[in-house]
Length: 525
Image (cartoon, rainbow, N blue to C red; front, side):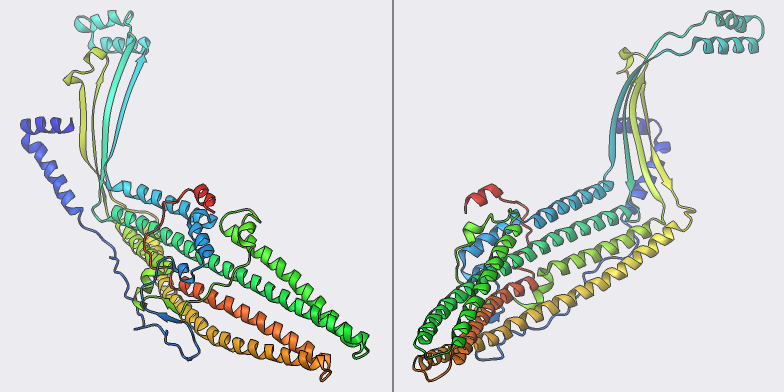
């Protein structure tokens, strides 16, 4: 409808209308200009390769630069672990909260992006009005007096006493449009800033997801490790009970003193106390896993209470190539998005110093009679630019620009710090993964030696060739070395989980936002 009015007007008064139209077209052409800094993706240093070469021939597992499976926990070949990991994305409450925060940032981006498009509003109204007849009489009388006696003035003076205003109907229908031309890139910079913040929120969610997956792996490894330690403690307790029986038999025969009997009983009691403590730790560990899945305490006990072996560390652990670290680590990607947002903020603050040009247009009809409401003569329209130029803002614009520049410099420092921290985490994880294997190998040798020592000590004790102190020492040494070996096996598997956490999880870049129905997943247990 506005176009139709323009076309009629241009035909009637070409020069009067073409001049402002040409001005508007020029302004629109200038909208491609922008002020402020442009964002350039930072270049990162990365080593040529990871320090993955084993430093000791005893190491049985090594990291390789092969592309790993995004579901990295599958390398342990533990169906229960894989099942629990697959539930994290849909059931963990921290991930759900981060998902909602991501939805909030998406909505905010949409709000910021709305300024790139015109606004169009339609309105309609009807009112029935009764205006003051006394005011009309006064106006007619005043006009009649000012017109002098006789003629038209006399007629108005006579009509002033009886003039009345009837009740009037007012029908109105309007369509209003407004569009700010983004001459200096202020609106587009605000949109880029909101988009970068949304990307940062996405990386925060991804970081939480990866961290909770690593937490699940560590908690599961610790659970299986504690269950293995409980098994060792129970087996040693049985051995100690058998030794206690042997000692009591020898005491009844007068071959040993009561000191040996009491020492044997104390050792059994110590094992009972250790078993009770391990059972408590196992219960708490199962509750920790239930919390990670948003379940109530003891909800997973029936599923996890049956002991299983500690997941075995595979001989090859694929970790990819170093140049991909910045693409995988969510905290690095988040820091880069924050830097992008800060640069866009400086551009937006710079554009605030320049004029704002807004095009306003409206078309409508107004009539005092519904019958004439659709008449072409009832139309009313307007169109034209509106320019706003900041003259004095009390230092607000300057202060805002200084603030955004400081935020940009801070974001650059945070980005560099985050990158260095990422490489530190990876290097520390590789060191722990490498050196724990050497400790594990030493503990294997220690366990074998303690077993042989206990066998010899018991044999000598049966034949009266040694005292009970040597048996007691051999049993304590064996139990300690076996418990240390179980802890080392657990730590080694946990180190692999920590390594993948430091590397940014799997190599996935997509954000799994479609959540499978939780009830279906729980029912699949």
